[in-house]
Image 1: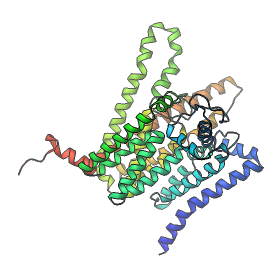
Image 2: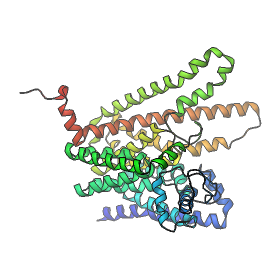
Image 3: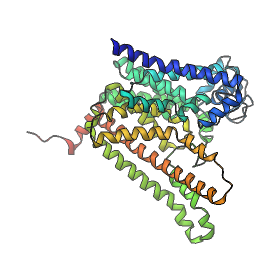
Image 4: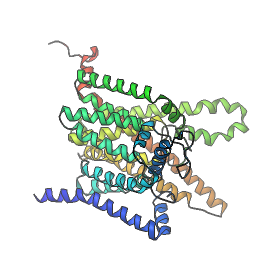
Length: 441
């Protein structure tokens, strides 16, 4: 009874503490704005002049769409006149009296829902795991997502709900897949969560994915023009900021070496193919790390079903986003799904389990990475030698961070592949392969 009471108190502390922090920052913004901006800047967040800027963008697009504007071209309702870069499904909310006046309520609801969703995740055990998870919850990535009121928090809530439904009976699991499809229609990348359907037997698996394919085809056909406009507006940015993605390291190095093309004309072709060769080598290294993780299949035993499901959800979302393109840092909040499972895999003794504890710490580093990068950016030296050393430190930090990303992605990819191999449909498919069939007695 005492342990149950303590667990309940710990779970309750997350939304209560999060709500209290939200209230404190709200009070600072209203009464002491300079302290509000300085505190967030020290946290590694670049605050806008008002909170929940990204929630404002979506609400502004809905409001102007309702007023007859083509918000993929021009959105005067937005404070920055940003074009709408998301799914046209968001714009269907124009049937309601949505205005930018909803910005603060929507941002607060998203933040509070996020805290509740964190409470529902499998909880860490022991002080070390709680330190890791708490640092992740308080990270720059998390603070940035909340400060912007970004709609990836909404996807986080949907994914959390789908994860809990996936743990239940078949009817609830079918509902989970429906929510996955809804999230995919909003932000596209959550379609990768249909990997969870591998838990079903082959016939239901085929039926579910066939139906999903038909519904997605209808969605694309109905919203085709808006989807084309949205995809043409997908933003890209510098390889050296908080954006994460597979292109950063190979093409970032190429950009650093680009001045050589002016000095050595013969090096132009080599510089053009260099990033692709480096990318191929990084992918091979990632696959090697995935295979090594897959070889530790016995380490999945400490995982309960909730930990396994949410580890898979976090792994699928992070890995797919990493290879799909550049992602703004706040999308790293999906790491929070994976951490409880990784820490559970690190509980046994031995070198193999310790590797998963290391990965958990590396994820914490990545989630705080923008705080470290911003600290370096704000450091200035007048002395030329010191300034040169600072630039070297910045470049070294960037390289180290990108290599850590590839290491973490390799392990998560191995875990995702392991889920597929061990799933109901995965086992049926593998058992049907000629080389894997058991020899007759």
